[in-house]
Length: 103
Figure 1 (spheres, rainbow, N blue to C red):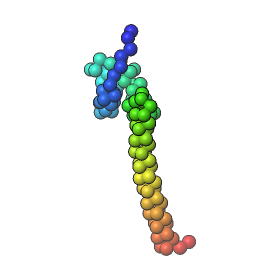
Figure 2: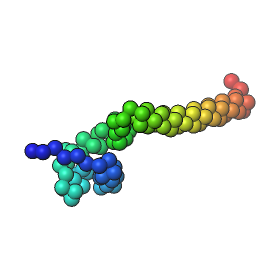
Figure 3: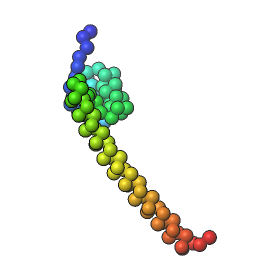
Figure 4: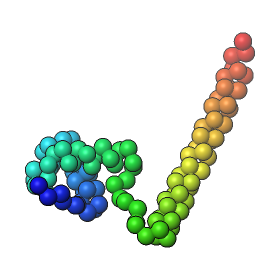
């Protein structure tokens, strides 16, 4: 049996369809793909985060890794700010609670 290669866009589209329907076994036959293959794509997307592969060329790969790192760093900074804001809110609420019920 010959091994087939599928484009990343198709994998993402089928993954979205599986999320909507709820089962890979219902989506896969309509696309003439094995349910096991679709389940593997979904599992890979959950563990890796994206089914898209890095380019083979070293310079292109480096640029793509730097781009992804920039995106992840920006998300990380945003999450850090959100956590800091929530911590401040909790601290203010604790102080207010102490003022209302000094025990």
